Amino acid sequence: MPSSLKKNFRVSVRVFLLLCAAALPANGAESVADLERFPQEASSYLPSKPDEPIIDFADQGLHAGEYVRNHYAPWQNEDLSYMDVSLDKVIEFHKAMAKKQYYTADAKAYPKASMNKVIANGKLDPKAELRPGIALAEADMRVLPVAAPLYTSQASALGRRGLLKLDAMQNSTMKPGEPLAILGASKDSSWLFVATGSVVGWVPSNKVTKVGAEFMNKYLSSSHSVVVKDNARVLDSNGKRLCTLRLGTLLPVFEDGLAIPTKGKDGMAAIMKLKPEQGVSAPFPMPFTPRNAVSVIDELMGEPYGWGGSGGYRDCSAMTRDYFAVFGTWLPRNSADQARTGVSIPLKEVPVGERPRAIKENAIPFATLIHMPGHIMLYLGFYGAEPVVFHNAWGVRVNSGNGQAGRAVIGKAAVTSLKAGAEIKNRPASSLFIDKIAMLVFPADTAPGGR
Image (tube, rainbow, N blue to C red):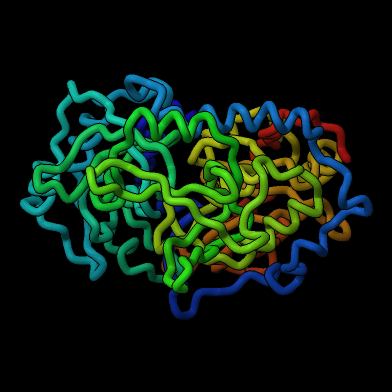
């Protein structure tokens, strides 16, 4: 779980310079040749035995039990201790955020008076008790109760030279049916401050409702299915869209269908049963085989990059989190905490030239994460003589002249080597992924063995 609120809300100039970042490509930004060099269909990386389990299904069951406990943690704790966070820390963090200067999307300074109003509107009671709730729909989780994007610099706001447009107010997103703890409301009642199993943030109040004991008992005692298709539309009998389900969404099974919450006449959550189209969901967890892993990866392939879920898209750690969710392994929200999950093997002291060999000898395709500061990638195996990864990344750092940094844009979920961008002449030394990787991570405690 995240070790501090600061990690959940890591927004700084340092992050601004990292590879995981959100923006639309600026005109003239260089592209990365790996996007053409390597097949962008996950099936190209299937091993010779695609149905051989990567993890024993009994072990998967143990991880899935832990996943469910973490998922429902907001309903079963009296405070935020399950995230190593307290409401006092949240309040202090809000105060610190308010002291910074932000910029609007047109690079104009956001007035201090406006920020003071935002903070006053979101003032929390440090003695507030957690109330159980549930997400009615997908929604952004904001650092402060403000919907408009705000940026830490004018360069970030404009996204020039392929640089990211990092909305400093965007923390994460919540999924339909996600259990929540409600910690407070804004003064104008338009926002609620909530906690999921891994993050906290402000969400629009119409996206959340309170739950009662009977509702919670039904959810907690049910079996579950997991959504294995991304952005799957669920329609009612008249063809009207009820909701959109994203890959990795966990939902209870009731009778012959799944359950999503709706707001009852009494203002409390009620259960609405639905029957998605065949293939949208699978019993939780889905068996962890290369063939199933490939099907999940192909659902995510090509998705545009979205910092903290901006624009309804994933960033690097949201993608790995949803990928492993299908197979019953819980991951924290940000990449640094994901790197501390399960078993790890350090690579930082391994010479760069020897790192491919170390990866080949130890990493397990589809089950190993490769971590570097600010970024995380899923190892797929070797393609020819090179290790390849699946990741959602913004780009590779380049020098754009006059000492200004820029990016050669990837900007989506893609397969690349760890030397993506090596062909670019105006990049700084030691700027490739292979130069910066720090460790191999085995989230499901899979013993390294070089399969």
